[in-house]
Image (cartoon, rainbow, N blue to C red; front, top):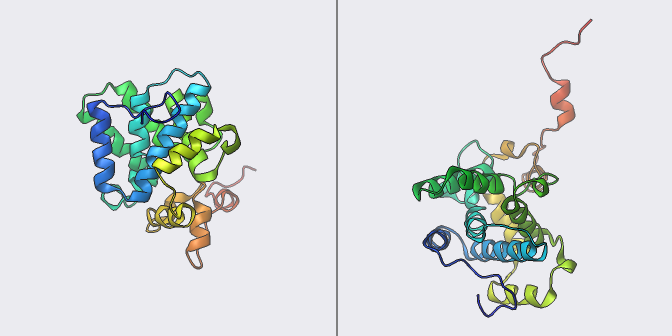
Length: 214
């Protein structure tokens, strides 16, 4: 990555290399490139904002952030984000990483699709969210240096990304649509599962078994 016009590089630690190997082993080319772009986008945003963050931890979180979409790491009843967070916890704990760093990575992955919260948390949590937001939604596209953005995409291409990402993304939780309740992913289930109607908070509140007080 030294040929990028940025100070951002892929960490070369053993931990980062093992995370890369696992990502390559279990992931698709689309999710591999997406995960690396998420790190590079997030890390560059961190540099631009002059944040003090742990590049290695951010990289590992980016590498694992979509592991919950993969069959090997997917549970029958947890949100896919939590499955990915649990996978990174197992990986980091096995490498004797201090619990505080483990918890930061867990929170970053668990909250990487949750708007309105991460910007108030540790930089690694905030930057994973913003890196995902840029790569998937284009959030912050015009504020990111265009030359660097084009270099990153050239090295880690977005081949048919929009169409294929939605399909791979949906496939990761199509078997458990109920876990998307209260998340941005419930609308994807409604769009792609014929006849599926996501629960909504109004109906849940109205169906509460508590009687109103006299």
